[in-house]
Length: 316
Image (cartoon, rainbow, N blue to C red):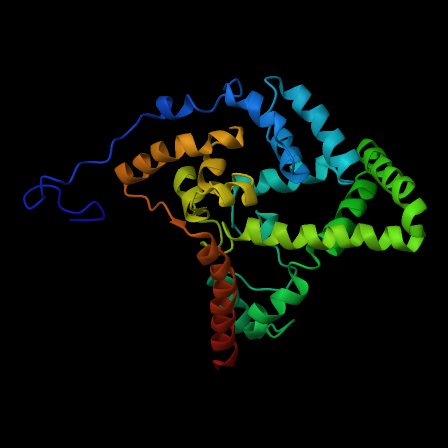
Protein backbone atom coordinates (compact mmCIF):
# COMPACT_ATOMS: atom_id res chain seq x y z
CA UNK A 1 0.00 0.00 0.00
CA UNK A 2 1.03 3.67 -0.38
CA UNK A 3 3.02 5.54 -2.99
CA UNK A 4 5.59 2.81 -3.36
CA UNK A 5 3.00 0.19 -4.33
CA UNK A 6 3.08 -3.48 -3.35
CA UNK A 7 6.54 -4.83 -4.00
CA UNK A 8 5.83 -8.26 -2.52
CA UNK A 9 3.63 -10.85 -4.13
CA UNK A 10 2.45 -10.08 -7.62
CA UNK A 11 5.59 -8.31 -8.74
CA UNK A 12 6.92 -9.62 -12.05
CA UNK A 13 10.46 -10.86 -12.48
CA UNK A 14 11.18 -8.09 -14.96
CA UNK A 15 10.58 -5.43 -12.33
CA UNK A 16 13.98 -4.43 -10.97
CA UNK A 17 14.18 -2.07 -8.00
CA UNK A 18 15.59 1.35 -8.84
CA UNK A 19 19.13 1.62 -7.42
CA UNK A 20 19.53 3.85 -4.41
CA UNK A 21 22.52 5.96 -3.48
CA UNK A 22 23.78 7.58 -0.33
CA UNK A 23 24.07 11.35 0.07
CA UNK A 24 27.88 10.96 0.07
CA UNK A 25 27.79 9.29 -3.36
CA UNK A 26 25.64 12.08 -4.76
CA UNK A 27 27.94 14.72 -3.30
CA UNK A 28 30.89 13.32 -5.28
CA UNK A 29 29.53 15.16 -8.33
CA UNK A 30 29.39 18.47 -6.48
CA UNK A 31 33.01 19.25 -7.31
CA UNK A 32 34.37 22.31 -9.10
CA UNK A 33 37.53 20.36 -10.02
CA UNK A 34 35.70 18.03 -12.39
CA UNK A 35 37.72 17.63 -15.59
CA UNK A 36 34.80 18.82 -17.72
CA UNK A 37 34.91 22.24 -16.06
CA UNK A 38 37.98 23.10 -18.12
CA UNK A 39 36.05 22.42 -21.33
CA UNK A 40 32.92 24.13 -20.07
CA UNK A 41 34.78 27.38 -19.40
CA UNK A 42 35.80 27.52 -23.04
CA UNK A 43 32.27 27.33 -24.38
CA UNK A 44 30.45 29.85 -22.18
CA UNK A 45 28.50 32.01 -24.57
CA UNK A 46 25.60 33.30 -22.50
CA UNK A 47 26.60 36.06 -20.12
CA UNK A 48 23.53 35.66 -17.96
CA UNK A 49 24.42 32.08 -17.11
CA UNK A 50 28.09 33.00 -16.72
CA UNK A 51 27.26 35.53 -14.01
CA UNK A 52 24.87 32.95 -12.57
CA UNK A 53 27.76 30.47 -12.19
CA UNK A 54 29.99 32.99 -10.44
CA UNK A 55 27.08 34.07 -8.25
CA UNK A 56 26.60 30.45 -7.18
CA UNK A 57 30.33 30.10 -6.43
CA UNK A 58 30.57 27.19 -8.86
CA UNK A 59 33.60 28.17 -10.95
CA UNK A 60 36.60 28.76 -8.69
CA UNK A 61 37.55 26.81 -5.58
CA UNK A 62 37.87 29.98 -3.51
CA UNK A 63 34.66 31.89 -2.89
CA UNK A 64 36.48 35.22 -2.99
CA UNK A 65 37.44 34.81 -6.64
CA UNK A 66 33.88 33.91 -7.57
CA UNK A 67 32.60 37.04 -5.83
CA UNK A 68 35.17 39.29 -7.50
CA UNK A 69 34.57 37.99 -11.02
CA UNK A 70 30.82 37.97 -10.43
CA UNK A 71 30.87 41.73 -9.78
CA UNK A 72 32.82 42.29 -12.98
CA UNK A 73 30.64 40.08 -15.18
CA UNK A 74 27.21 41.15 -13.93
CA UNK A 75 28.30 44.78 -13.51
CA UNK A 76 30.59 45.63 -16.41
CA UNK A 77 29.27 43.15 -18.96
CA UNK A 78 25.55 43.26 -18.06
CA UNK A 79 25.04 46.57 -16.25
CA UNK A 80 23.41 45.02 -13.18
CA UNK A 81 24.27 44.62 -9.50
CA UNK A 82 25.86 41.57 -7.89
CA UNK A 83 24.47 42.42 -4.45
CA UNK A 84 20.98 42.93 -5.85
CA UNK A 85 21.12 39.57 -7.64
CA UNK A 86 22.52 37.72 -4.62
CA UNK A 87 19.88 39.18 -2.30
CA UNK A 88 17.02 38.11 -4.55
CA UNK A 89 18.39 34.81 -5.78
CA UNK A 90 19.51 33.41 -2.44
CA UNK A 91 16.05 34.04 -0.99
CA UNK A 92 14.57 32.21 -3.97
CA UNK A 93 16.80 29.19 -3.39
CA UNK A 94 16.11 29.12 0.34
CA UNK A 95 12.31 29.37 0.06
CA UNK A 96 11.25 28.73 -3.57
CA UNK A 97 7.66 29.68 -4.39
CA UNK A 98 6.89 30.77 -0.82
CA UNK A 99 4.92 34.02 -0.60
CA UNK A 100 6.66 36.87 1.23
CA UNK A 101 9.92 34.92 1.24
CA UNK A 102 10.69 34.25 -2.42
CA UNK A 103 10.87 37.56 -4.33
CA UNK A 104 10.31 35.71 -7.59
CA UNK A 105 6.63 35.17 -6.71
CA UNK A 106 6.04 38.80 -5.74
CA UNK A 107 3.92 39.80 -8.71
CA UNK A 108 3.11 43.35 -7.51
CA UNK A 109 -0.63 42.61 -7.89
CA UNK A 110 -0.17 42.04 -11.64
CA UNK A 111 -0.76 38.29 -11.42
CA UNK A 112 -2.12 35.83 -8.88
CA UNK A 113 -0.28 32.53 -8.54
CA UNK A 114 -0.98 29.07 -7.24
CA UNK A 115 -4.23 28.22 -5.50
CA UNK A 116 -4.15 30.07 -2.18
CA UNK A 117 -3.41 33.58 -3.46
CA UNK A 118 -6.17 33.86 -6.10
CA UNK A 119 -8.76 32.57 -3.62
CA UNK A 120 -7.60 35.07 -0.99
CA UNK A 121 -7.72 37.92 -3.50
CA UNK A 122 -11.18 36.81 -4.60
CA UNK A 123 -12.56 36.57 -1.06
CA UNK A 124 -11.24 40.05 -0.26
CA UNK A 125 -12.68 41.39 -3.53
CA UNK A 126 -9.25 42.54 -4.70
CA UNK A 127 -9.25 43.34 -8.40
CA UNK A 128 -6.16 45.31 -9.41
CA UNK A 129 -6.44 43.69 -12.84
CA UNK A 130 -8.90 41.25 -14.45
CA UNK A 131 -7.02 38.17 -13.26
CA UNK A 132 -9.33 35.82 -15.13
CA UNK A 133 -7.56 37.17 -18.24
CA UNK A 134 -4.03 37.08 -16.82
CA UNK A 135 -3.05 34.18 -19.07
CA UNK A 136 -3.75 36.54 -22.00
CA UNK A 137 -2.22 39.83 -20.81
CA UNK A 138 0.82 37.87 -19.58
CA UNK A 139 2.14 38.06 -23.16
CA UNK A 140 1.91 41.87 -23.08
CA UNK A 141 3.39 42.75 -19.70
CA UNK A 142 5.29 39.63 -18.60
CA UNK A 143 8.06 38.59 -20.99
CA UNK A 144 8.33 41.97 -22.79
CA UNK A 145 8.69 44.22 -19.73
CA UNK A 146 10.29 42.30 -16.86
CA UNK A 147 13.92 43.15 -17.65
CA UNK A 148 13.62 46.37 -19.72
CA UNK A 149 11.39 48.10 -17.18
CA UNK A 150 10.98 46.43 -13.79
CA UNK A 151 14.41 44.87 -13.27
CA UNK A 152 16.32 47.87 -14.63
CA UNK A 153 14.42 50.28 -12.41
CA UNK A 154 14.73 48.05 -9.35
CA UNK A 155 18.45 47.46 -9.89
CA UNK A 156 19.29 51.16 -10.17
CA UNK A 157 17.08 52.19 -7.24
CA UNK A 158 18.46 49.38 -5.06
CA UNK A 159 22.06 50.44 -5.65
CA UNK A 160 21.25 54.09 -4.88
CA UNK A 161 19.06 53.49 -1.83
CA UNK A 162 21.49 51.00 -0.31
CA UNK A 163 24.46 53.20 -1.27
CA UNK A 164 26.09 50.30 -3.05
CA UNK A 165 28.64 52.48 -4.79
CA UNK A 166 30.92 49.64 -5.92
CA UNK A 167 28.15 47.89 -7.86
CA UNK A 168 26.92 51.25 -9.16
CA UNK A 169 30.40 52.04 -10.48
CA UNK A 170 30.53 48.69 -12.30
CA UNK A 171 27.08 49.29 -13.80
CA UNK A 172 28.04 52.80 -14.94
CA UNK A 173 31.13 51.35 -16.63
CA UNK A 174 28.81 49.08 -18.63
CA UNK A 175 26.69 51.97 -19.90
CA UNK A 176 29.76 54.05 -20.72
CA UNK A 177 31.25 51.19 -22.72
CA UNK A 178 27.95 50.48 -24.47
CA UNK A 179 27.24 54.05 -25.56
CA UNK A 180 30.85 54.80 -26.52
CA UNK A 181 30.69 51.73 -28.76
CA UNK A 182 27.29 52.26 -30.42
CA UNK A 183 26.62 56.02 -30.52
CA UNK A 184 29.09 56.48 -33.42
CA UNK A 185 27.07 53.95 -35.43
CA UNK A 186 23.46 54.68 -34.42
CA UNK A 187 23.46 58.05 -32.67
CA UNK A 188 22.21 58.64 -29.13
CA UNK A 189 18.58 57.72 -29.78
CA UNK A 190 19.52 54.71 -31.87
CA UNK A 191 21.90 53.43 -29.18
CA UNK A 192 19.20 53.79 -26.50
CA UNK A 193 16.70 51.93 -28.68
CA UNK A 194 19.24 49.24 -29.43
CA UNK A 195 19.95 48.76 -25.71
CA UNK A 196 16.27 48.36 -24.91
CA UNK A 197 15.78 46.02 -27.86
CA UNK A 198 18.50 43.77 -26.43
CA UNK A 199 16.79 43.86 -23.02
CA UNK A 200 13.46 43.16 -24.70
CA UNK A 201 14.75 40.00 -26.39
CA UNK A 202 16.60 38.87 -23.29
CA UNK A 203 13.49 39.35 -21.17
CA UNK A 204 11.39 37.04 -23.34
CA UNK A 205 13.94 34.26 -23.16
CA UNK A 206 14.57 34.77 -19.44
CA UNK A 207 10.91 34.68 -18.38
CA UNK A 208 10.02 31.55 -20.33
CA UNK A 209 13.16 29.63 -19.32
CA UNK A 210 12.97 30.46 -15.63
CA UNK A 211 9.22 30.16 -15.11
CA UNK A 212 8.78 26.80 -16.83
CA UNK A 213 10.49 25.23 -13.81
CA UNK A 214 8.70 27.10 -11.01
CA UNK A 215 5.48 29.01 -11.68
CA UNK A 216 3.78 25.78 -12.76
CA UNK A 217 4.55 24.16 -9.40
CA UNK A 218 3.17 24.67 -5.90
CA UNK A 219 3.08 28.36 -4.96
CA UNK A 220 1.86 28.87 -1.42
CA UNK A 221 2.57 30.14 2.06
CA UNK A 222 5.32 28.64 4.19
CA UNK A 223 4.62 24.88 4.13
CA UNK A 224 6.87 24.06 7.11
CA UNK A 225 8.08 20.83 5.56
CA UNK A 226 11.61 19.48 5.27
CA UNK A 227 14.01 21.31 2.96
CA UNK A 228 14.37 18.51 0.41
CA UNK A 229 10.61 18.10 -0.03
CA UNK A 230 10.15 21.87 -0.26
CA UNK A 231 12.60 22.08 -3.15
CA UNK A 232 10.93 19.22 -5.04
CA UNK A 233 7.42 20.61 -4.56
CA UNK A 234 8.42 23.98 -6.03
CA UNK A 235 10.68 22.78 -8.83
CA UNK A 236 10.42 20.58 -11.91
CA UNK A 237 12.77 19.56 -14.70
CA UNK A 238 12.57 19.74 -18.47
CA UNK A 239 13.71 16.65 -20.37
CA UNK A 240 17.31 16.52 -21.49
CA UNK A 241 18.25 16.99 -25.13
CA UNK A 242 21.01 18.82 -26.95
CA UNK A 243 18.67 21.73 -27.71
CA UNK A 244 17.09 21.85 -24.24
CA UNK A 245 20.49 21.85 -22.54
CA UNK A 246 21.70 24.66 -24.79
CA UNK A 247 18.51 26.69 -24.68
CA UNK A 248 18.24 26.60 -20.89
CA UNK A 249 21.95 26.61 -20.10
CA UNK A 250 21.61 23.16 -18.45
CA UNK A 251 19.09 24.63 -16.01
CA UNK A 252 16.47 22.32 -17.43
CA UNK A 253 17.87 20.27 -14.53
CA UNK A 254 16.34 22.74 -12.11
CA UNK A 255 15.74 20.16 -9.39
CA UNK A 256 19.41 19.27 -9.25
CA UNK A 257 20.33 22.95 -9.35
CA UNK A 258 18.20 23.66 -6.29
CA UNK A 259 19.57 20.69 -4.39
CA UNK A 260 23.19 21.47 -5.30
CA UNK A 261 23.35 25.23 -6.00
CA UNK A 262 27.17 25.32 -6.11
CA UNK A 263 27.45 22.41 -8.54
CA UNK A 264 28.74 23.32 -12.04
CA UNK A 265 25.84 23.19 -14.49
CA UNK A 266 27.39 20.59 -16.77
CA UNK A 267 27.33 18.03 -13.94
CA UNK A 268 23.57 18.11 -13.38
CA UNK A 269 22.89 15.29 -15.84
CA UNK A 270 25.35 13.09 -13.94
CA UNK A 271 23.67 13.53 -10.59
CA UNK A 272 20.06 13.43 -11.89
CA UNK A 273 19.75 9.59 -11.78
CA UNK A 274 20.99 9.64 -8.20
CA UNK A 275 18.43 12.26 -7.20
CA UNK A 276 15.67 10.27 -8.91
CA UNK A 277 16.62 7.18 -6.92
CA UNK A 278 16.60 9.17 -3.69
CA UNK A 279 13.12 10.49 -4.49
CA UNK A 280 11.87 6.99 -5.33
CA UNK A 281 13.27 5.64 -2.09
CA UNK A 282 11.38 8.19 0.01
CA UNK A 283 8.20 8.43 -2.10
CA UNK A 284 8.82 12.02 -3.22
CA UNK A 285 7.56 13.01 -6.67
CA UNK A 286 10.27 13.88 -9.20
CA UNK A 287 8.64 15.84 -12.03
CA UNK A 288 10.09 16.05 -15.53
CA UNK A 289 8.36 17.05 -18.76
CA UNK A 290 9.03 17.92 -22.44
CA UNK A 291 10.02 21.49 -23.26
CA UNK A 292 6.85 22.46 -25.15
CA UNK A 293 4.68 21.01 -22.41
CA UNK A 294 6.62 23.01 -19.82
CA UNK A 295 6.11 26.25 -21.76
CA UNK A 296 2.39 25.53 -22.25
CA UNK A 297 2.01 24.84 -18.54
CA UNK A 298 3.05 28.41 -17.73
CA UNK A 299 0.00 29.77 -19.52
CA UNK A 300 -2.16 26.96 -18.21
CA UNK A 301 -1.21 27.63 -14.59
CA UNK A 302 -1.98 31.34 -14.98
CA UNK A 303 -5.36 30.49 -16.48
CA UNK A 304 -6.20 28.08 -13.66
CA UNK A 305 -5.25 30.62 -11.00
CA UNK A 306 -7.29 33.28 -12.76
CA UNK A 307 -10.34 31.02 -12.78
CA UNK A 308 -9.93 30.34 -9.05
CA UNK A 309 -9.82 34.09 -8.43
CA UNK A 310 -12.97 34.70 -10.48
CA UNK A 311 -14.91 31.97 -8.69
CA UNK A 312 -13.96 33.36 -5.28
CA UNK A 313 -14.55 36.95 -6.39
CA UNK A 314 -18.08 36.24 -7.65
CA UNK A 315 -19.00 34.08 -4.69
CA UNK A 316 -21.04 36.03 -2.12
